[in-house]
Length: 197
Image (cartoon, rainbow, N blue to C red; front, side, top):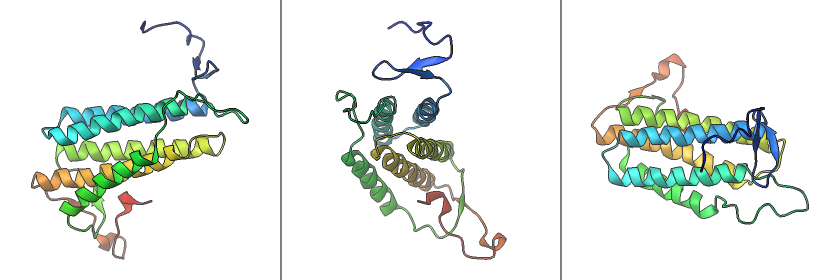
């Protein structure tokens, strides 16, 4: 496959099905946000010495390629979107939930806000979580304007939760204590805001 095609030199790019849109179109912005999330997970993997987590992150990166393909396919009223385009399925979300449950079984319950950081792996997982949340926001914004596969939002929502608990788990397994946000700054007992929704 040739890397440069010159077809985008005038500021447009192709969608699945052959339609062309501006590179600043909302759908392309969303695809870019998902791509950034995928790339941050690649960075996490360069820091890992846990084969199981590396394999799971590779699986998620593959899922995000599926998300990107889905988002690159327009849903035209009265027509079935390209049947050959892979879609994120409910079982993909269920898999993430199983991994969340397994990680939380190792962790102490969260009773305070925590500050992102700790080990390099944990800090990068927290960063990936924030990028994933941004991708989710972009997808929600697109969904208010154009038809998308609803499962995409569910998947990204659950993925950000998973990255949060994996960041905590990385610190715990390394024996690094998390930095708590003092509740006195807010005048009340804090809750797990970084896991919200």
